[in-house]
Length: 158
Image (cartoon, rainbow, N blue to C red; front, side, top):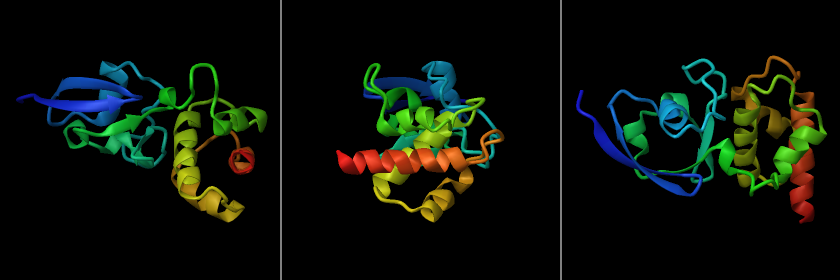
């Protein structure tokens, strides 16, 4: 299979990559760029562990052919914090105990970041509905919803 060159901007850094037509974006991020925060969970878009942001919106990177992402500006979980300074949402996940095993956490944080980009004042039902595609086997979601609410409150306060 002939490889194709694509250009990605990931976490502010520009990459020119040779990819096969059947390579998925998740594998490019993990195996070629060594950004392993996005997880390979189900591989069929059901769990949300591979969630990334492009243009402020969340995408399941396991479903996207890398060639389709040519020209995209992508943020992975590694690109959210500014050095050692976590985003309010990342800090809220810690403060509210929304992290247990941690496997789903990157995808959950990325989806919740997109949620707060779209709606800075979500109610509990909105949060639950928005996160419905992200699966967690450990937390029971209560702490996750509380973390999103806490982050939204902190962002509204400035």
